[in-house]
Length: 314
Image 1 (spheres, one colour):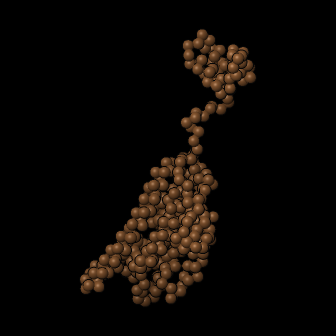
Image 2 (cartoon, rainbow, N blue to C red):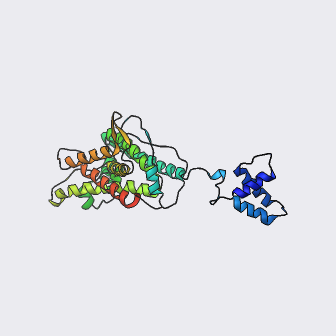
Image 3 (cartoon, rainbow, N blue to C red):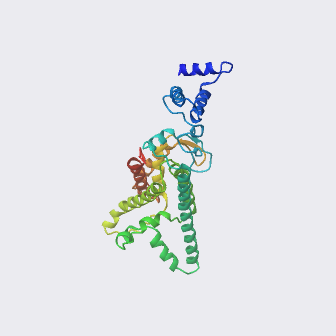
């Protein structure tokens, strides 16, 4: 390379040519009608570096452009920016880099759609409830057995669809509000993660809900097998939320959360605290919370992360 550059300095002694411009000059000579094509080609190969130069338009980042990930909260408060280079390396280990923005938009639309379904089912319940107070009992008597879960109806009446429909049902507006805020706060971690497409995101959410229903049924089976009348009903999006929270905790363990917008805590500690709470009150007869459903959803979310999301090759 030094001899070729010396030749250029000899041809144009009054002007210094930078090495990059020298490459461009020699290359332009090669593409013109030169009387010495062989010598020109030799000079071009001499000046060419061992690795091809990256054109200016290809100097962008290897990862697709995206908005910064933001940690969210359970309640009202502000999140903090969250960098995810290590996770991207694991998820992109196969070399395939999908269109992140399109994938993230679809996942977020799915998340908002799930929230909309929950709100719509709650709105319909409020309607049939109002109808019942006016003496029209048929709508609510049809709604409750089909949109809530009862162990006797599930096994004895073979209403297997309760395992899914009960995940989208809420009676108490505060129960609905807390679950929806939690679903958005934890769900967007997974929805905006590169490499997790709509199929995997939906599998995580629905699978966690079904696992939560299985956990509820497993706990109530003891009364059913003894022949006791069990009128307890399971409902709510909590199993899905716990599954998304478990997967998010493994992917972003140090993301800072604000519990009710006040108490800061890392995501791993928040998830662990919920698991300890549910495990402690699992067999409490006075509790009205479906702790077994929470644990079932969290178990599925953790298992799905290790089996499908951690170090996945796309």
